[in-house]
Image (cartoon, rainbow, N blue to C red; front, side, top):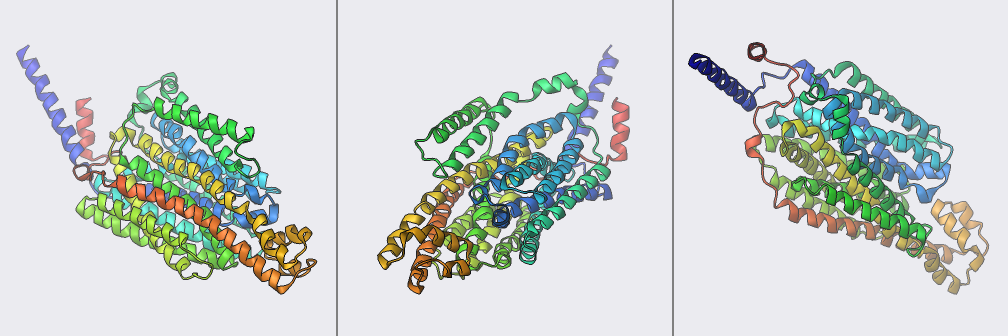
Length: 553
């Protein structure tokens, strides 16, 4: 009996020693299989960002062909809503049923949505297509989770930096290729989304053929019924209802309904109550600083994506290509920032100060944009540098910290929460921006009337005058009854100043939120002890480990 107990004790001690050893370092070199899987994740990330950036930069091109300019913000907004609603459940499903299925299927569906956009005959159809494509963003956290868990923890900053480089390249592609196509063809946006559909289908095929992960522990430990019971159905419904109705109410604010209208009051009230109920329901889960930090990053990212090129084209340079060139500076800078912070983090294991610097860059970017006048175009070439630095530093640091905080088996769920909160930033930010923007634009008619009528311009011609200015149609402008050179110059100046004030409202709000990010990031704790050589989900198992596992079984 004593010999048996000694043998059992000895076996347990050996098992514990082996597990501890494997926890400290189970990385035996970078295999081709691991590199191929990382390539698959970067390809899927690339096409998602390509679609997201184009939804903002090409929104005006779509509305000029299909109409529905008042709804164009929904091309981006629906992606933000779909991401924050789908990311947590898809991540939890991936923990129970595996990563490969959700990534492959949802990415393929994204390609179908792009085909719908390319064939759209109305703005509503384009938004519906973007809604279908938005399903692909449900697997976005899994791309970051897989890219991290197949590499040593110490290399995670490099993994996130690599994904950020893919993001930057995708944004540059969307801005420049999209602008060239729109300039060359009257309906060039259709060609762009055909190309995007092809990238989606390619990414899905790569994931299907090359990503072959070993089954996770939860996949085989639970029955299908047990897995379904463990899904957070109440939380999913609350966040979906809350964010959708909240966004809808703010988007309708002054466009076309007033705040006292039931169309605003009802969805706004239900949305707020649902969001509050969601946070009360989930309050038992303790989250770290990264959650709020990535929310702030989302507020900034969606503001820039939706309004930067919009402002350039409307006020400074009507050429879409040059607006895209300005914005692409953001992503060239982000590549440099991602490489720099990844290398710094691997060597020093410190992430707090780069995160603080990131939010300082966001504040500078938004402040510069808010300070713009009608002639200060040089700032539109300089400010994207600070935005790019902020994006490159912020995502690399926050995703790394957020994934190291929970246990390894929850990396997909924690990634889902991170990217859900990033999209919550966009989902809440975009309708607020729309409301702030529209509150000023709604004064346009009144401002132009008060300036032109004293000059003798006929009041009945003012709607046509505003329409011609908005379309930048000089021929139509010259043909308006009662038009004079003075009225054109005066009306154009009032038009531009009104839009400038509307854009300024957006940047001031984003700057205020970014300042909060600086304060909160001071409370971040550097995860120095966790940045070791342990691999959470190795694709290759060392021969000695395989031998031990067979003997211990």
